[in-house]
Image (cartoon, rainbow, N blue to C red; front, side, top):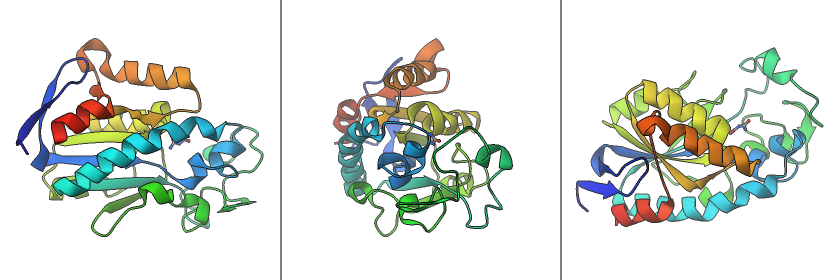
Length: 223
Ligand code: C5J
């Protein structure tokens, strides 16, 4: 592989040194992707997210072949809810609240079946799994230290949902100096219009938060 392959991204192409690049897969958990989890308790149609799985799987397979650092994140809380702000738990009128028992165990609680990553993208040995209590993957986690230890400067970011945890993480990463390339078809939202706008917000104004590219363009540069 070229050490500085160029990705046909928007708003402009970007060349990444793969040895300083990590693949970050945001919250591809059963709680968001499958019926009976957190996403559905909020009234969402979880089938909207399925389209991101195949593009992510292809990039993940290539990243593994290249020996790239792979980071998976999971949103969730301790069983005693000590890291769940009441303002988050009490919000809205979901059918089940965070911590309530559901068909995949307690909603959005670490260690429960619903909290785990979907089988199609399950982490393998050597990959990093970051458990995060918030929407951003840097807040109250070891992610910053892990990336520093591995000499990472660039992030390929994908996962769900585009406008919530993907956007929040990309904004956090941007402020920390990382170049973020968001894989457009490797992200999804319960609201297709928010997906579209979430991507546009990242790449607008000369790439105010980062770059956006489809998985085909990312794979072309990786291979
Ligand atoms: C949400 C996420 N949507 N992973 N979490 O609450 O985007």
